[in-house]
Amino acid sequence: MSAARPLSLAMPVSAPLRARDKIGSVDELAAKAEKARARGKTVVLAHGVFDLLHMGHMRHLEAARREGDLLFVTCTADRFVNKGPGRPVFPEQFRAEMLAALECVDGVAVSNWPTAEGVIRLVQPGVYIKGRDYENPSDDLTGKINEERRAVEAHGGRIVFTDDITFSSSSLINRHLNVFEPQVSAYLADRRDNGTLDRALAAIDAIKHQRVTLVGDAIIDEYEYAVPMGKSAKENIIASRFESRELFAGGVIAAANHVADFCAEVEIVTVLGEADSYEDTIRAALKPNVSLNVVYRPGLPTTRKCRFVDPGHMRKLFEVYTFDDTPIDGAIERELCMRVRHHAAQSDTTIVTDFGHGLMTPAAIRATTESARFMAVNAQSNSANHGYNLITKYDRADYVCIDAPEARLAMADRRSELGELIAGKLRSAVGCDRIIVTHGANGCVAYEPSAGVHRVPAFTRQVVDTVGAGDAFLSVTSPLVSAGAPLDLVGLIGNAVGAIKVGIVGHRRSVERVPLLKFLTALLK
Image (cartoon, rainbow, N blue to C red):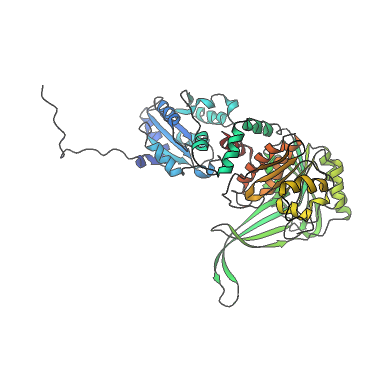
């Protein structure tokens, strides 16, 4: 028997397929899948974030490949990853490349849909693969597994659940990568050990049947995007080039939309100006379960706050208010009070978003106080009312949520330690035993007599836009407090809400239940 012939350097050798060569668009994967099906091949699809590729992923994908002839994998685009600050750790291109480097994977794409159904409909896999932790639909926080199953079965495919070792990327990242500052990591490590995640998820689930009424100022937030060009040649001003414009329904409207995904019914009681009412813009922005109850002010505009913004870094240059903040009176005030009494009396939770633009008169405050079963209040200080719209105008509330400057201004106290100020002077002044004071990058401070003062750190330093973050915190946490959740837990959930909101420009979208559940799960795994 002759010896094997040694490989000659002159012999042509095919170069191995590079990982990058396996990466394409979802449309390209769909075209390859169609050709494979025409040849009688079975296409398998796996989808996920794959932020930290680990042994669980390897076993999952190897099992997937055994279900067919070709395995395609799609990973969620960065902007749709709702797993908290610093996530994804690896950007989408890196995640795609890591997946493509696996021998069992035949093609990879980044999905530009927030969920998997769009990819499934386009690729039409014969087999769609999920891990065993999705086998019981009731364990799926997102509720998407049933929709994914329907999308797969619509074109004759089937869903298969792999059964091998599993790890959580979030748990590994939380424990072994320095995503957070040391004090935040220590806080979260302590909460992971005492069942906080289960309590947080249960608290959010407990408010799903609530009816909520919001009373407050309607505001149109306008963003004029303008790029600074330089100093004017003839004036001591900066000249800018207009690029685009966005209109958002803000104020009480935005607050109502935030709570709408957490509770069954939401009512808004507010005032609009008959001149430049922007009612079409406002109604178009409402979530399906939000109802608008309007009293009109003749001859006046709906409050509009126009911010001129450098779009490069979302830096606000200056703002112009178009409004009349003369307090409502007469027939308009009586009509508002009647509507407040009617809706507050029928609601589990009433939230007052008082921006100090003339709506919350003493009569309106009295109507709300006397009729609300549970009353949550924020009295905002802003450039139009600084020093004149203090939380002390309310002599009764079941829950107060304001920021640190508002708390200090109301108590005329710049120096006291914030926790002592809340538990002492502020509590006495507003006659309220449940108070949370938000504190920007420092998180929040919560107080209730049974547990004392709790400090909850902020969970993100990635701030895109702070407009409306406090309103989102107030609107989502109010029904939680109404349902009896302890304030240390409410503060944690509220800071997660705030972390999500500061990543949103203006009111382009609202804080929603599923992203919040994912955020909390990623924090506390």
